[in-house]
Image (tube, rainbow, N blue to C red; front, top):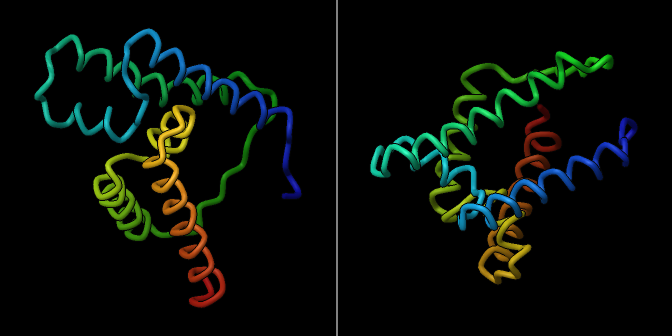
Length: 143
C-alpha cells in the first residue's frame, strides 16, 4: 500500500468499466477475457468474430506497451517466481476459469455490474482462493 496512487487507480477502473460497458452495448457481448481468448483458440466462430476478438486481445497487449513507452515514469516489476511456477500458475488459473465458467473480468466486472448472483458467488470464490493462496505461499510455505 505504500505505492498506492488513488487517481490512477480510479482512472484505470473507470476505463475498464467504460470499455466493458461499451463492448456490451456495441457488440451485445460480455467482455470476459477467458471466454474471448477461449473462443479464439477453438476456431468455431466465423472469421469476422475471430478478427474482432483478436483485435480485442491485441489491444489489451499493445495498449500497455504503448503507454509504458510514452510514459515519463517507468514502472518496475520484479518477478521472483521461476518460469515453471509461472506456467503452472497460469494453467491452474486457466482451469479455474473453465471450472467457474468465466474469469474475473467476466464475473467480477461485467457480471457484478449486471447484478448477477452467480457472478457475485464466483467473484467471492475467486477472492477467497486468492487470499488463501497468498496466505499459504507467504506465511506457511514462506515464499
